[in-house]
Length: 62
Image (cartoon, rainbow, N blue to C red):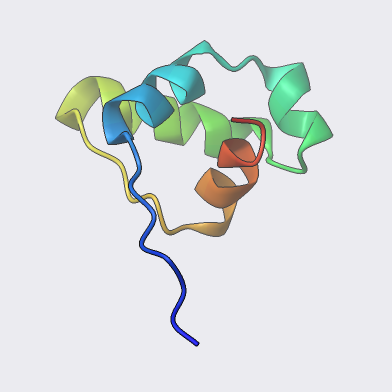
């Protein structure tokens, strides 16, 4: 059985990651340095790989 195609709003996800604080990330088992690296990458490049474990954990709150 095929899984339904999921459409994601990448800009919305990146904005939420920029707004997440360290304590929220820590509660989702994402180290603060990983969060900071993701936020830095978003600010500098405007892009983010949505398929990493850390991003998937942070997306679980959305």
